[in-house]
View 1 (cartoon, rainbow, N blue to C red):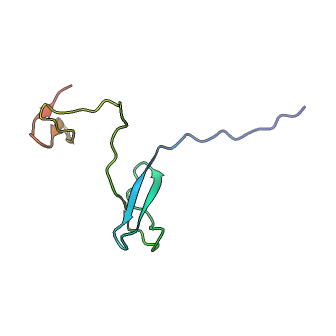
View 2 (tube, rainbow, N blue to C red):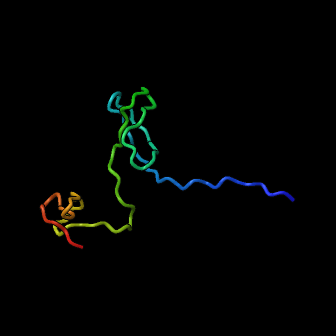
Length: 92
């Protein structure tokens, strides 16, 4: 009996998927890319002008931080989380 060594799979890299568009030729498509990707090659014109059409947000049921004013967008500063709507620092 012999032992065959198998390569260990690399750690999974998180990916995002969603609508994308080209700011050059206006082509739209569904893109899949590693998290942090901000520019794509357009499948129609080949230029590196592809962008995500929408921002990413947590899945249904995940906890989302929200200010008392109802806003969910915060600026992350050295002093804490600053509400982009009312300007109040949040404490958790």
